[in-house]
Structure formats: C-alpha cells, structure tokens
Image (cartoon, rainbow, N blue to C red; front, side, top):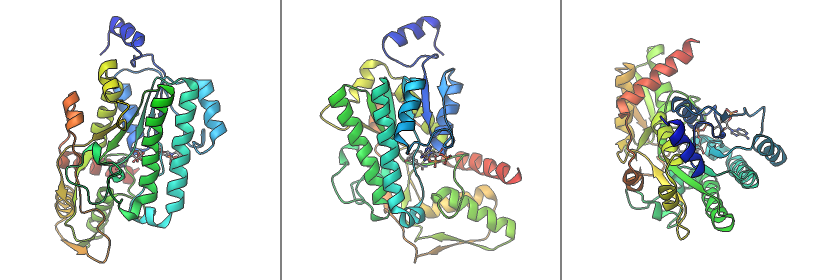
Length: 335
Ligand SMILES: NC(=O)c1ccc[n+]([C@@H]2O[C@H](COP(=O)([O-])OP(=O)(O)OC[C@H]3O[C@@H](n4cnc5c(N)ncnc54)[C@H](OP(=O)(O)O)[C@@H]3O)[C@@H](O)[C@H]2O)c1
C-alpha cells in the first residue's frame, strides 16, 4: 500500500498513485474485469469504465470526446473482439476490422489526451506458428502465422507497431503485453466462440449433468498449451503499470518493439487439460478426440524471463484455477 508520501513521489515521477485517473477499456471482459478488481484491491480510487452501450470503441469521435472529458492518465486497453478458432474462421473480417478500429481509436485518443502510460493487451498468437519454444519477444515477425487467427493476430501486431511508433514519434510510454492463453471466472463459456478451457468446462459440465458417458474433445489432444489464471494476469498488468520510471523505460527501448510476454512458463497437453477438467468436475466417463477438427498451433509456450527478471511470477496453480473457474461457472448457471 502507498503512503501519502510515496503517493506524492509517485505522482511527481509520473507513476500511478491511488488518485490517478485510470481507464480500464473492456472492464466487463475476462481480462478487464480482473484488472479492475486488482486495481480496487490495491486501493486505486479513480477507476473509469464504460460499457459498450455507453461508449462504442469502434466510434472514433465518441472515443475522442470521452477522453477529452474524462482525461484518463493511465489506460489498460483490454477491449477487443476475441474468440476461439470457430469464431475467428467464421468472422475473419470482423476480427481484423474491429480490433484495428478499437486499438487505433484508443491509442490516438490517449495521445491527444496526454495519457502517461498505456498497456495494450495483445495475445501470444502474434508469434509465428512454428517458432522455437519457449517463445521469446524477439521472435515477433520471424515467420508465418497460424492461419486460423491471422486477421486477429495481424491486428494485434499492428497494435504493437502503433505503440512503438507513437513512443518514437511522440515520446509516449505505451507498452504491449502479450499474455498466454487465459482463463478465469468471467470467461466466455459459449461453445460457438469460446477458447479451449471454457469450452472443455462447458462440455464436461453438460455431459455430467446429462448423464453422458463421453466428452468429445476437438483435435488430437497432443498440442501443448500454457494457461494463466486471469487474476494472475491482472496482477502482472498492474505490476507493469506501477513500475518505477527506470524499469518501465527499460521496456521501451526504441530499437525493439515495446513488448513483454506474460505467462507461467509451463505448459500441458490438451489431453492433460481435459483430464484435469474432468477430475475437477467429477466426470468419470470417457474422453474421445475428434481428429477431423483442427489442432491449431502444436505448441505455444512463452518465454517469460523478461517479466521474471523484473520480479513477477504467477501464483495460481492450474488445477486450483480450474476449480475456481468451475465454481464461478456453477454459480452463474444457478442464477
Ligand atoms: N482470453 C484470453 O485467453 C486472452 C489471451 C491473451 C490475450 N487476451 C487479450 O486480452 C484482451 C481482452 O480479452 P478478454 O479475453 O478479456 O476478452 P472478452 O472477455 O471478450 O472482453 C472483451 C471486452 O471488450 C469489450 N468490447 C469489445 N468490443 C467493444 C467495443 N466496440 N466497444 C466497447 N467495448 C468493447 C467487450 O464488451 P462487451 O462486454 O460489451 O462485449 C468486453 O468487455 C484482448 O486484447 C485479448 O487479445 C486474451
């Protein structure tokens, strides 16, 4: 917790203090809601949010008017059009257009409003499909992307490039954070456009509730995935935005993209993931693998040494995080 003295020093240095005006874009989503919770837990009092009905981030004039009125000093950009393989395949045009629009509108409005620091949330799908593992930040743009979510990934790469370009041209302090696959209580459990873990939770819960003896998992079960609990991600995001000037500036070296991976540095196979979900939910039927469905990238494990070197590590173990997510899913189904 900051004292009034450290708070005053923080303000002088341009660092976040408890009265700073902090805008969390996408505060109802998995990431944004976790960031807002974490900020409140840390004692930040001036958090600004808007629902999509209150502010459509695709609407540039509305975004500019909002920034001019609210004058946020710090921005967590966690609003985006997000989805799994099926949604990305079905709506590729929406994925590239909306993500480019949202991030361009927020980044430009932030510059005009003199925002001190901005954290742009991207995704590990920005890295080449077959790049060496674990994936270092330096592997950006070193090979072809996974085709199923290329429009989304390219929008995110453009977002990183925008942060970098703005930092060079305008001297801004915009950092791009690339989280690994996330999961947590506010996840999207819709089978038509959810990620692998919430989809597994939903399918397994349905199978248990309906007395089915089988859960069908997409793909071969062999791809490896790294998963980070959303509260851990939120903690990492706040940790980064609170860094002192020297350490924050060290991430904005003008010669390389202002990019930092956020993950656990550990991964499991989809089969192991499905087995853990079955164990947590108490489903004792069979897991079968539909090999006619795409596997996606064979392995995606982030190199998190840059973040670890700054002093941050994840806390919530996978099985514990799945248990918390399952409990939240259950609560939601009951209400
Ligand atoms: N989930 C993951 O596994 C994961 C992994 C790595 C990175 N990320 C990144 O984290 C960020 C957030 O992802 P998420 O999982 O939290 O997504 P999410 O749960 O779908 O939340 C996205 C949020 O953005 C808002 N939003 C979307 N379009 C908007 C618009 N035009 N105007 C205003 N608000 C809009 C949504 O509002 P509504 O609630 O009204 O829809 C929602 O609150 C994304 O940049 C994503 O790339 C996510």
